[in-house]
Image 1 (tube, rainbow, N blue to C red):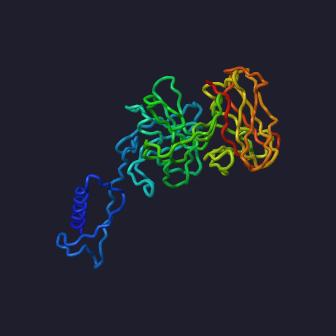
Image 2: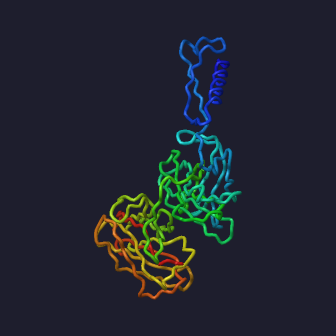
Image 3: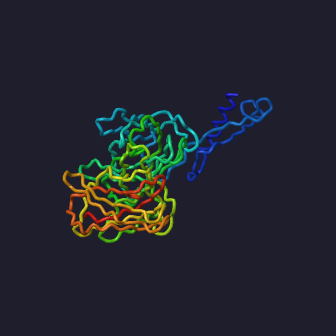
Length: 399
């Protein structure tokens, strides 16, 4: 019996070596029945055919660049938590794949156990070669095995050169729980320069606070050339895209966040790709019944707003009801900067994407002081359970 298996394997390997130069060996399973080997007239045991299952090597990735597979190449991540008040830090390790199966049969994977910090993340080593997006592509893929569906997985480019801003894709969700899923992060619309960025940062369940002890697995971070052209939303001259949940996002949190029955917020798939908004991802607010519940930016802009040329903002909103009020407020993190808001804008029709406009020209706001946005949906009302969607926040260009 053992001799039969041995000689079957030898024959299979000979067959692989004899393949033409252009042949590609895939990871499909070969079913082999041997005849007349080692004194056996047939590969039988107990009068029945003996099937030998042999798994062949993984598919060749062609021109793709495998950045990390935890076997032949490793980005040597380290867990980073900035807050000194964290009681449960995130844990990271490389382990034997405990959930091998459909989607990922590799032997080794990365493992993350979440802590209780909101923006804990993994930071890679500095690569020997900086990214050359124009030649090697702008699309990155990563296999993820998530403990829950719909959680944000952020993918960020970082440079070891001082003063270079980090750039990230924040709109990707974890997909199904308890299953290997390949996530895609296309940074084409970020227009990053070649030979500048040389590190990768990954955030699992990004932006969620106090959700420790959740186990994530990930594997096979690959850089590949995009197969489709990404068309960014149209931005008028003199304006800038602040948030579209695709290539650029503001990180929002709910206030009051610790009050029972308050509203909830998530980035989600666009439920109505029609009219003026056919993008894939949008923000979603579900009202909780608090009269002045709101969203505020938790990541102030690195470059404050400039109003000397323009002071107009626009935002696409899909309201669950006609006549709902949507407040738009500007704030600055520096002490003494007064909040300024426009509170008289309403959505005329329900369940239709509508472009709302907020003109702050009459406020004569100074340049370089305001760096945050606050949003109130159905402001002043106490209804709960209503879903509001918003997208494409555009404002004055800051350069």
